[in-house]
Length: 80
Image (cartoon, rainbow, N blue to C red; front, side, top):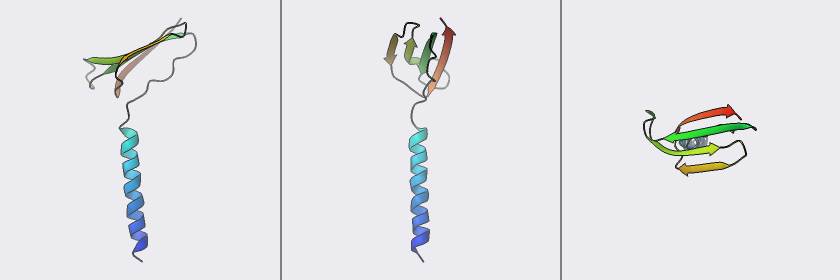
């Protein structure tokens, strides 16, 4: 039957497109723990030379963000 190979090819192509869509999203830093200060900096590329965005979470729960999120980031966390 011609239908089974065609169906298998269609499913394979759909899974490939879904994988590409999922892996192209910006990376997310892990959540900041309670009673911790967290700082996330997003960079334009893998060399981490140009910061293009950031997120700061203070000990009192205040969150400040700026710029854009990318897939290149650093995340630091320290107890309050």
